[in-house]
Image (cartoon, rainbow, N blue to C red; front, side, top):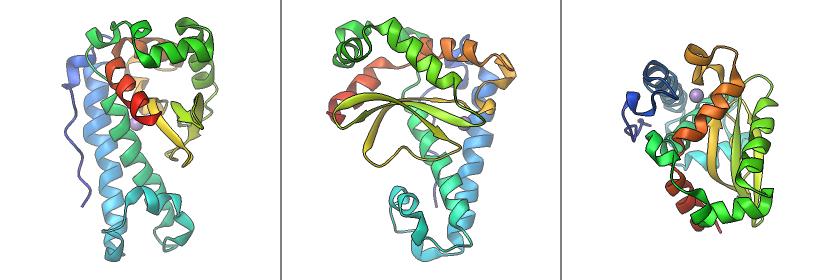
Length: 203
Ligand code: MN3
């Protein structure tokens, strides 16, 4: 059975940037629903419980056809949200000086500056059509900003270090159609220390 790991912060901790109500619904309803539907699908083929979920999704063609899309969509949603929660934290964390961190130094090299990076990330996130995610990932030793659709995982050769959920359920209660404002608010609650740890581990 796939269960949700505890959220690493309280629902209200990301206020005023990401609101309590959205966080609560996002975790207890949306994320939970991915876990529930994933479990329901795997129950039909119990031999799959012992397999690594990520590998099952990457090798989706080998999944039984009756549950293939359920496992890809809900397993992806289950994993992507677990990753997302761990890079979010109280607004104090967003104030950490990125320039002092290894990941910040690499961002400045790769994108000509922190603000230039944020602008590039914003432009990429604004270009997600429908539902999806925008990631910062290490791919072939380089930092790349990458979009994925729906609940697809990043390509296998990418190691994620940061992500933003761009499904409307992630921001609509507070921001409605104002996705750009949501993207700008996000930077205030990024736990850069965690992103830096992930970057160092990925190198
Ligand atoms: Mn979501």
